[in-house]
Image (cartoon, rainbow, N blue to C red):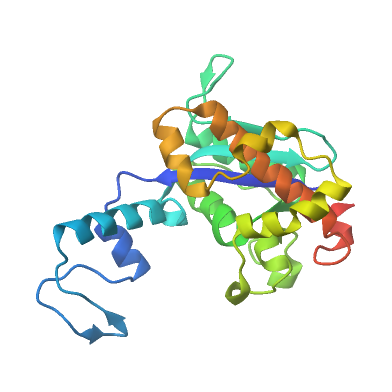
Length: 247
């Protein structure tokens, strides 16, 4: 048994663009400077339109950078169960309103349940580092199944971004990966019809849906994501994914 997981995030509003630029060491905004320093190129102050475009671009990039992301949703699917599940910040569960801390705690409870056998797309570069960064922030106890000192070849997690291509320099976006595998998946699995309406949806649309409070579409989107991860992991079992992982 393994569990597929996926966080949905938006940019943290308490950190500004300059914080992001400094952290990521990307070109900053400096007046009357046109030279290369320490291998990074700086530019002359851009005009108003370019400034706006840069603000929007880096604002959205923050949502996919662990240090600058705020978690608003979590999707998961247990490999032995037919349905995927999701929960979003602001949802009411009994008498409790879901917040970010509850999502992070749920992630680690799923990790413990699967004994580290979790799957995702870019999970090793984003979802897992994000969950780790949130632990001290929310005073959450780490599960015993997480081995901090594990070597790369000792890790039990499976990242589909690297499973087939073997490294960060041969990455393929999840949407392209899914479209290339969809015909094969359709031959062996039944793709739930409720996902038809969001098959073409892009990850950068999450922020807009969140602002519109369109929680139903958000839930479908993240559940479709983890369903696809679960399906691809099973499809690749014994080839790009160890057979022992999907047992």
